[in-house]
Image 1 (cartoon, rainbow, N blue to C red):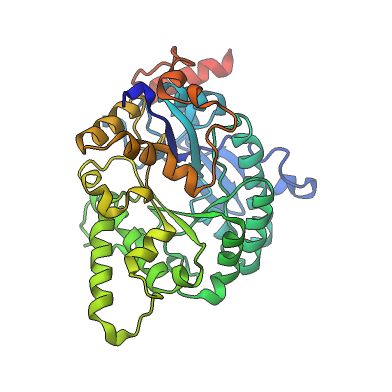
Image 2: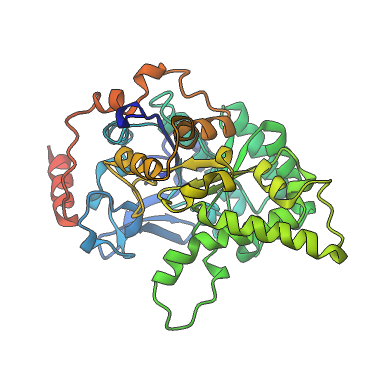
Amino acid sequence: MQIDDLILVSIDDHVVEPADMFDGHVPAAYADRAPTLVQNDAGKDVWSFQGVMQGTVGLNAVISWPKEEWGLDPTAMAEMRPGAYDIHERVRDMNRNGILASMCFPSFAGFNAGFFYNAPDRDLSKIMLKAYNDWHVDEWCAAYPGRFIPMGLMPVWDRDGMAEEVRRLAAKGCRSVTMPELPHLMGLPSYHDLDYWGPFFDAVCDEGTVVNLHIGLGFGAIKSAPSAPIDNLIILATQVSTIAAQDLLWGGAFFRYPDLKVAWSEAGIGWIAFYLDRCDRHYRNQVWLGHDFGGKLPSDIFREHSLACFVSDPTSLKVRHDIGIDIIAWECDYPHSDSIWPDAPEQIHGEMAAAGCSDEDMHKITWQNTCRFFDHDPFAVIPREQATVGALRALSPDVDTSIRSRHEWRERYLANQGA
């Protein structure tokens, strides 16, 4: 397959929420209590709500920065490439990268809705969380039909409220939610506690909603040495997905809820082959523990429930059929530090070709598995012949791909603000 003939659906990107996102989405009686974007003394943008302050980590929006300037320090919107927060520029950047559709995780709100969870008045938090979801579905995603798969936040502190929000979002056409990998690290019940999570699992199964477990929220499970470098967290983050998988597979959720669907977001795929071999061997050996998977192996159950998502995994692609070719999906991760822009088609095509992928395998990895798992019709709005890398790139040939310093981006932002 030629690069221009690829069809790319990215199952993991991110949005840096604009300052006006709550406008028109919060009930009038609460409008003056909505989260606000303010600048701190260092000139960095932070969201403020009920005394909780949350900014954007630099690594979360480094697209088009020199790599030497990357870091964990907070940043301001003025320093970012506009595609991070501006929907129109985002679509132009998607075109330049040949990406047909994208699913965007939140930034300040947290993949686990931690920003709202940590606020003292959780009734007010729930109102704002719903407003966040309405903005994401009705404004961000709806601005360009066919280009985005909507995703919702969950009020994880509210057992019945989660189920209600799943059903409310499904009625709006949103059947994807982001959840904590390891909720017990937040002080919530673990996924073993099916009394607590049962109503939520029932709702997502009823509605066909996918539960996305994005890496990064389980850092508390990594007990590194006091002097360990930051590299430990960045590199080992994907391994935490194994713990989350263990909780769902061996804790009973996957067996009790046969329609439960989980996407392992940005977790890579290399851990899966070893993990499933280990699970099956354990199941056969440790008979005394009395586990019963209904005549199936643990690996069978895992594959029935999972979509494994990766940005770049050249070695693991060589064992794609051992992992399960029908459960592997590609992601871009724009605008994070792991993202591939503007040459994602060249990179993923090169990795798949080097691994000996057939055209059929390529289509499964780059769009078919994702669209099946999320029940998303990629060509409902945009005809297939207009959805290829070559066709999309032709729509925005003038996108500037220059590397610019944070200072340069700020200067351009201020100049545009004054224009």
